[in-house]
Image (cartoon, rainbow, N blue to C red):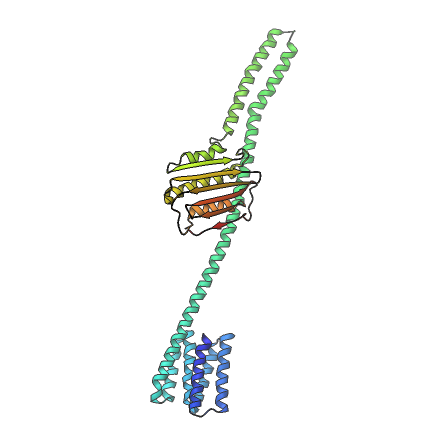
Length: 367
């Protein structure tokens, strides 16, 4: 666009020289020099020094041929592009000094148009620069966010691992301190009772009775320890059904196949959270009267199918709910497919071996 705009001035000057029948070798050389200078500025180095030299050259040649004064438009374009507005003063002085009165309106018009185009070019390039900087910052922040998320996930896994080790150590210590010592004492009493049998039956019976009482106490301690280890909420199919049973908005048809007992607690938590989020969205937006939820479990994958008979929508607006579902599934190497045609459909395919990786498939229609 810049080449086209500046070429208009050169074509105009050439036209004026042809009309006046005064095209000489010197004038052609000047036009070629000015053309080369502008090409150099546009492609390599747009320096204000070159613009000043161009202004001096046009002013000197303007004494011989006033038609060249119209090339001040090129200079006006450059000084407004660089926001050196004070440079317009010598241009106007030169134009008023060299041109006849009849040509001054045309000269002012061309310089004004050039100034406007130069100013607009500068504004657009400045906006483009700001946009690119913002885009680069956003991309950098996105990478930093992904890195932070990966670190957070690793930290979360480490915390879970450390908590598991601490809990195992606590259980082992509790059993050792409370049950182990007691059982060791009972064993010694039983051995002593066995040796006293037939020699001192009264003492042997006392040791045997004492061993029975202590063994009963140890059994009670062991039961209490196991009871404290067991979580308050069941983590099998009942954990999933608890969300569905508490949903009162519409009828839910729940089906499942496969062994829930072998699923990890983390995988059950993801399925539980995604079902809960889907049912929340259904109660808010779907106007549905029925929801079908199916969970299929095989040796490699878990497939979660959620479909309502609601109104659906034309474009999916991914809020925190849907984006959270996608992140949870994708972060463990699974895939999620969402469709908003004929109700709302969510299908999650999650590997049994949880790992971070690329999903199996991912397709999200616009809601």
